[in-house]
Amino acid sequence: MAGQPKPDIRPILNIVIVVAMETEALPIVNRFRLTQHPRSLFPGRVPWVRYHGTYKDLSINLIWPGKDPASGVDSIGTIPSALVTYAAIQALQPDLIINAGTTGGFKAKGASIGDIFIISDCAFHDRRIPIPGFDLYGVGLRKAFNTPNLIKELNLKVGRLSTGDSLDMTLQDESLIMANDATVIDMEGAAIAYVADLLKVPAIFVKAVTNIVDGDKPIVEEFLENLAAVADVLDPAVEQVVNFINGKSVSEL
Image (cartoon, rainbow, N blue to C red; front, side, top):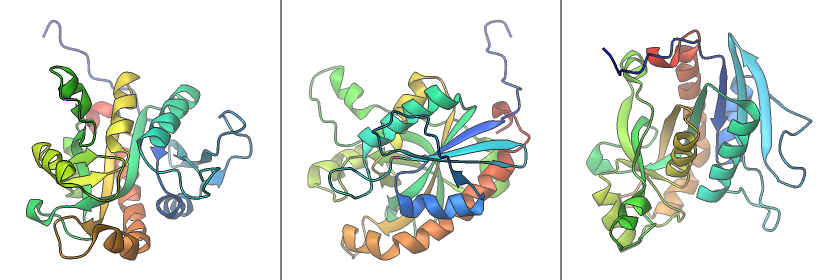
């Protein structure tokens, strides 16, 4: 049909996996036998870490924001993830971005500890700008790249993601998360979606549930209790996704 964009039939050869935390990153690094690249593509003073390797027909780069120089803890949150995603796209020109990470889930939306979700939509819940037009900009709703064949083949759950820069949840946050119709929440996904959309790189999101937001346990306590175990569930899920991607074009996902 005239005016319809042609499907992208080029095979996916180069993927970048963006991960927020070292605990999430290392099982994936080990599974794909990636090695830390001694010469950084990034400016010399930034703490960002790049692992690289080949897997089947794919060149894989895993990027995580590294340790914050001032505090020594993982550089979590929207700003570090947006920065490394932008820098990785500029330097590596990937065919596809995968954001792999852990997430809080809502049992009312069908989430359980250890569940793996593919994200359909990303939005923010802590950018409150009550001015017409700016309110929608603050929410920043974006669709993740549509992967119907991947979801069907791997029989994965699908949900909407809401992103904020705090691990706890205020009443205001909760109200906006509900307005976003979120199944899961994290601290980086919508920022990565923003950068990927800006630079027109397809992005998919693979999220593993560490804690139940509407459950009985405090969010922080349950997150810390389950982080390592759920990270070990995340990496085989990422391998399944990468195996499905191998040899396909983005239009076949």
